[in-house]
Length: 160
Image (cartoon, rainbow, N blue to C red):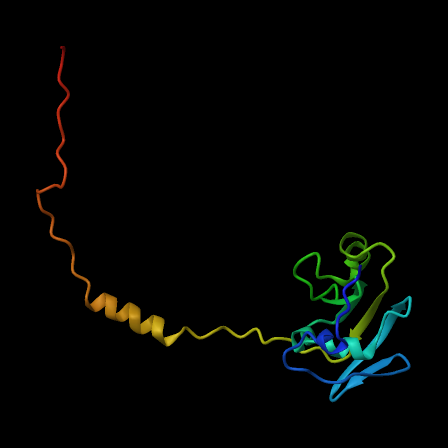
């Protein structure tokens, strides 16, 4: 017995993002532009993609969406030149589809025309850490070494 879900509850984003429109092989919304490379079994649905889309996906060169149990799952991939980890390379797409997607599940591949690359600048140290460490340095006092111990050491008794 399948549970009926109200279509309004399909929107998983708390803050709805842009509404995507498909025009041939182009998918666009606001200032975002994607190219639809693969649409296996007519898997791409602009409305459902709009519901699941997050701006965190803009850093990827490719977005892969696959369907399982009537839910859309999105995963980002980098170009082979940019990828640091093995699974995030687009050349590993076939492996991803075989390992993590349901067998024969519909899927689509979008290419991000203008990916947003994160800056690789060095992070500034946090001020509170510097202040805290400076305060600790100022208040540091070495322990007094006393001969008093909280326990006693007994010598072994020889013989019985």
